[in-house]
Image (cartoon, rainbow, N blue to C red):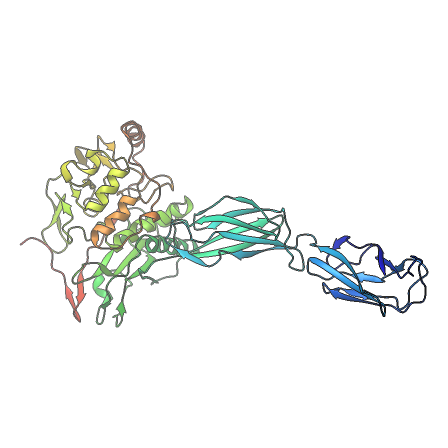
Amino acid sequence: MQSVSGAGSTATVGTVLATAPTFTVTDASGNALANITVSVAVTSGGGTLVGAPTRSSAGPTSVGTWTLGTTAGTNTLTVTVSGLTPLTISVTGTPGAAARIVVASGNTQSGLAGAQLTAPLSAAVQDQFGNGIANQQVTFLATAGGGSVAPGLLTTNASGVASGAIWRLGNRGGTQTATATAGSFSTSFSATTQSSYLLDLRYFGSAMSPEAQTAFTNAANRIRAAIVGQISTVSLQGADLAGCRINGLTGTLAENTQGIIIYASVAPIDGVGKILAQAGPCFVRQTSVLPAVGVIQFDEADIQNYINTGRFESVVLHEMNHVVGFGTIWEDKNLLRNPAYILVSDTIPTLTGSLDPRFTGASALAQCLSASGTATHCGAAGSGIAVEQCGTYGTADGHWRESFTSTCGGSNRAPTNFTAAFDSEVMTGYIEGTPNMPWSAMSIASFQDLGYTVNLLAADSYSVPSLMTMARLRAAQEADAGDRPVERLLRPRFIVGGGRVQAIKRGNP
C-alpha cells in the first residue's frame, strides 16, 4: 500500500478536508489492484470518517469524508489490508479563528498597594475549541485601582499565550483589576491590596446619595492601603455613642475592635456655608492613644458642590485622616510644638500667640525633606514640619501649613500677606479649587509617628512647591482666596482599655 495524495496537508480543526486523501493497493510491479478488502479508521486526533471504502479501486482510492478533530495537531487514519504493513495517513489540524481570550496565569494575587506583584500576567488567545492561536497581539491595561501594567502590548507564542506583563498595583486600595484584550475579546485579572488594619465603616442617619457613599468607600480603601499593620484589640463594652455629641449618633457598644469603627453621615448642621464637616476620634486606646471609634458628619447643605466638582472624595479622605488621628491626637502623643491654641477647659480654646506650630514626628520629617522641602517647610535643626498657624481652632494646629504668613486676620483668622507652603497637599487646612489634592508620603509617614505600621507606596506623587512655584501660587491665591469652609475637628473624648470607659479631661487649670 502507498499514499497517493493528501498526506501531510493542513486544515482547520473541526472541519472536513476539502480534498480527501487517497491511497492505492498494488502488486509487486506497482499495478493498482481493485477489489482488495481494506479497512480505514481514524486512529488519532479524534476526528470522524464517513463513507470509508471497504474495497480498493483500480486506481487511487479515496479514504472518504474526513472531519478533523477539534484539538490542534496531528490527525491520523490507518489503512489496513491483510498481510500487508498498515498504511498511516497524517494531516495537521490548525486552530480556527480567535473566539476568546482567557487568563493563563497571574490572577487573584495580593500585594501592598503601589507594589509590583510577584507573578507576571499571562493570557491565552483561543479558538472556539480552546486551541491557542499564535502571533496574536494582546493589550494589557490596569482598569481599576490606579495601577499600571508593563509592557502593555505582547504577542502570543506558539501555544497562544502572551506572557510577561508586570502588574504594579495602584495606591487606591481595595480590589483592583486589569484586563487583557485581543481584538474584540477581553478577560479580567483581579488582585487585592494587603492590609491588616481593620476599618469598619458604618453609616447612620438618613441615606446618603450613591455618589457620597462611593466617596466614603474609596477613602476607606485608601486608608487601609496606607495603614497596613494590625493594632491591639480593645473592648468597647459599654461605650455610649451619645457621648460623642454628634446629632443622630446613639447606642451603646458591646463588642471588640482590632482596628477602628468609623460612623459616617450626611445631615443638617448649620445650613449653607459655615461648618462643612465635623470629624475626629471619639474613643481611643488607653496605652497607645490610637483611635478605636470615630465619626465623620458632613453638612448636607454643602457637599453637592464638592461632588459636582469631583473634589468630594479628597474631602472625605481628609476627614478620615483626622478620625484615624491626623491632627487630632498629635498633642496627646507629644508631637505638636508651639501650638497656636491651648484649651482652657474641655471645649474652650484660647490663642497662645504662636505663629509657628510644628509637627515633630521623625518619619514625616524625613518624607518632607525627600519631597524637596526646605528648612522653612521641614524645620531647621529638627524643629519639625510647619503646621497651620491661622484659622480657627481645628484648622490651626491640625493640618500642614497652607501658606507662610506673619499675620492671621478677620473673624476666622485667615492668612494674610502669605506665600504658599504645602499648598495643594490634601492635609492642609483649605480645600483646593480642583480635584488635584495629593495625599503625600509625608502625611502617611505621620501615621507611623503616631504608632501605626504604614505603606508609603500608597502615597500620591507630591513635591513641596519650589520658591518660584510658591511665588506664582501666592499671586494666584491673592487673586482668589479659594474655598475656605469651616471644619470642626473632634478631639478624643473617652479612653477605652482594661475593661473600662473613662472620660478624658482636658484644659489647663
